[in-house]
Length: 285
Image 1: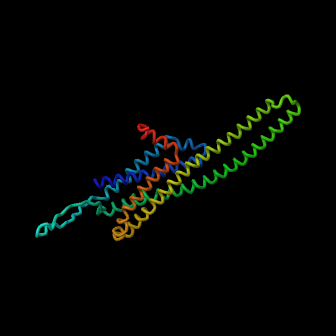
Image 2: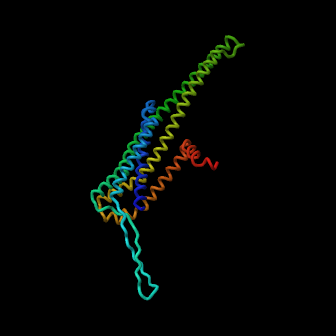
């Protein structure tokens, strides 16, 4: 049962890591491909990617299952209730690497590199690309806002000039159909540009949320990956004196990271909140 729990934890961790990688890549394609994002980021491709991640997570846990074994560890306690000492032996269990060095090497490759180090590297590269893309997008939005403001002032000036000329020609007709059409066109153009800016800001907010999740994941997993690499190359002394005592701290950091991710989703994504409440809290509301 102990080995099963460890295998399940590793499988879920692999699934979580590569799911974040897939979401980050999809977001990068959405930001950089523009209109073609409908093709690259379709629902079919998303389902296919998640299916591949699920299969990959199962494959990555196979070396972990084969490379570990449950070992009994006898412990003795002394009972001095009588004059003579009676030794009571109890058996506890722990998980150790299998004696096969080849299996241990494959466990290192899958756990330290494919589950921890490689996703961190990919997330870091994608994060840099997203930050550069956001910078370019914000610069375009600022330029669009400036052009929209100048266009609005220009159209307002033309409208006032037309009204003044109409009033001079006929004081009984303060406004004309041409003015109404011109005013409608002015408002329409401005509102369209305004909605474009608003949609761009909403898209950037989603990207900021994803970047925050990636940064938290890298901060949490990168030290664990470094410890696994050092554990492989420095040997048993490092494992017993450093890696194993820090095991509980690593698990705690992973739990904190998952909790913060959930809070970030709830705070920054209205769609996630609505979906979560409809699935789990609809009976209580």
